[in-house]
Length: 119
Image 1 (cartoon, rainbow, N blue to C red):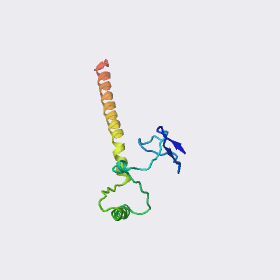
Image 2 (cartoon, rainbow, N blue to C red):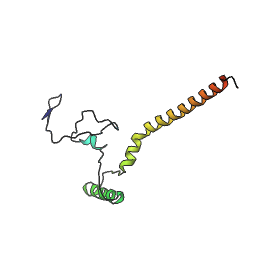
Image 3 (cartoon, rainbow, N blue to C red):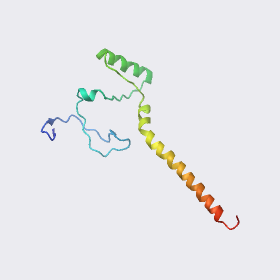
Image 4 (cartoon, rainbow, N blue to C red):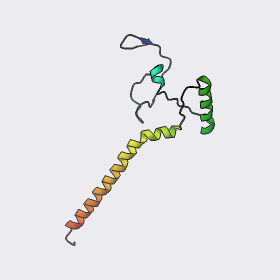
């Protein structure tokens, strides 16, 4: 049993080890999963692992969602595409670091060449 600051009690129904919830690669934070209310359901993400192909699984998810609520908007994407959005800032920083490193090497080479007595 967990108690929130306001005094509401929650029943623990499971424990997850090493969940990556908000930041890719960060697993040392404490996080609690709570039932989604109407406000949270607008941004709800469902991760599905399947041995089947993407197209057949996506079609099945869309059909099941449509059977539950025909008005519900459902966007089905691959996990790789979802992770790509989170990896983009790291890739930009890595590319910028590489360009700046190459520029520093070029400037150092020019400086050494200009300073050498044989030039």
